[in-house]
Image (cartoon, rainbow, N blue to C red; front, side):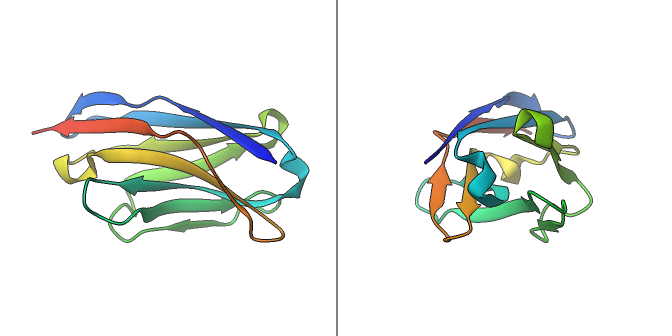
Length: 117
């Protein structure tokens, strides 16, 4: 089992920045990929960015490329999402995700990001 705890959401004006953190605990050595997803009411959860635990390979949704950066601190078992140039359409609940080598999915409780225009 892997437990994920997010922090760092909040309210920000358009053009501003926020940094989300996701601390993993439990069977972290089994994790292959960690990432961030987001969801708004009535819509499916969508991928924002992912990073592989060992090599640090990253992947981004087209909508956030050039604005968001995912990174990891392996010693702290923590993944970060630096969000710059935020837009109102980035408003969503953001969820941390971890996948292990068996493709089991683990989710955090979510953190709200609200971008005002």
